[in-house]
Image (cartoon, rainbow, N blue to C red; front, top):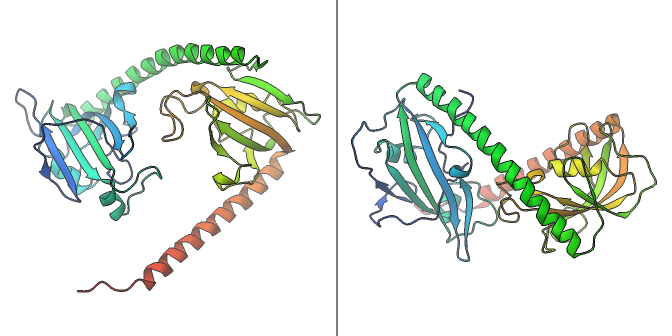
Length: 340
């Protein structure tokens, strides 16, 4: 089995906007939970068992609810009932369920922050994390779980392919309609990005063997920016390096950059399948959202230079992280001791 989904309230917060019957019990770490028993009988989930789980996740804030994940759109996960690997609070709850049962868990964001959990910036104190889980099946041994995992992966692959074809067609129509309504002339790249040249460059062409240093601003189709390295409000104004032979950017960028030269200013109209896909990037990029990027190819470098510059950037980032940790430790040491 290549990968299991392990329930972890801190590292992966599993939540959903839903309403239970109201008979919540107090759990550990400030959690409340409700178990909704299914009709029928069966053995309770035991330590050492594996189980197939369907889950949804949502953050309920003061202004709106943000759905973070829904396994029905991807695939169920196979998890291990492991007292060593599962947070104790969750282990205690899941140790009460049988096949077909559902669980609702809710917790204040304040409690997660207090425990040192890493929460996204849009999650504020006073908000709630509400999780819904359904136990689809229980397996007594790893072999049975492995077989179920393979079936889930095969189903997910088929589902992804079908969904992708539908979404690609939908995205392409949205983008072409938008371009037509604005009378914008753009060339379609091999993968499906529409590239509008704003200012043609006169330098060397971008290839898969060069490093690209670039300026960029990302916007949605309403024109609202969500990231930029030329707008100081986003707090990072260094040129962005992209190693074309091993890019760590969305596929739409790579496809679009191959059509540019040094000095080119362009606008990319990127379909969601070549951007952040059906997951999006909450809260700024919605699932299946098409994006617009204004880019400028400022400089091209060879592999040796690009690799050396990346090493310098990594060292700088490590130093900044160490300085931050030292500052946090210093501030913690200066805090007055709690009254006993």
